[in-house]
Image (cartoon, rainbow, N blue to C red; front, side, top):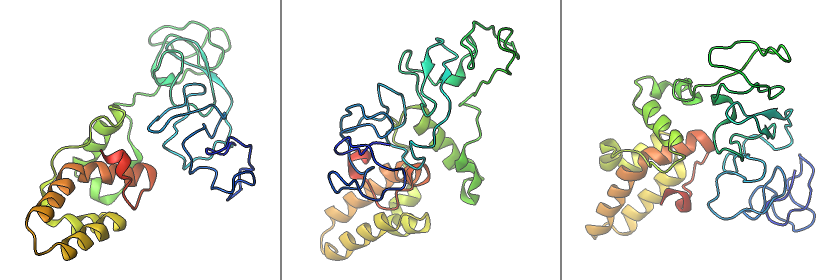
Length: 228
């Protein structure tokens, strides 16, 4: 894989880049999968299509290249987005993912290479979020799906529990960093009314999105650049 700070090729198990001395996945300047230049806030690599935000899976966990089922373009084995048409490669039905041959809606087997055609419906797909007991009621499951399907443009609805019990709510959900920051602000500025109220508004308006980022990216502490 590549160091995201200096583009040097590093071993998949390296904790630090031996060229720049930084942790390979902590930068923002290059794609960890192909080394292409990237920018701050960019979610997908425009060259290979991998998710630049979700680094839980190392780019060295290579999968074979396949074809986008929307446009037939060959996509990187680790890509989540086809860089040719901008859609998720396996949500279409017009091309075989294995050989790129033309297919039709409802077709199960490619008549050219004989493989079973794959198709993923993300709107109905059961997310890993639902494996947690507190999402059984479906509230957070629905919120997380809306956030994910909007490419995180939607930041979640107003959360009254987070408004009234912000720091406690955050720590109960596993966001210890966010909860401790909220407690610290509350204690330090307890003599004022405006700041704690603003903090409560933050928890209510960004609580669901913060919780989504915990489940999606493992962020225990808040990434304020992404929250706004």
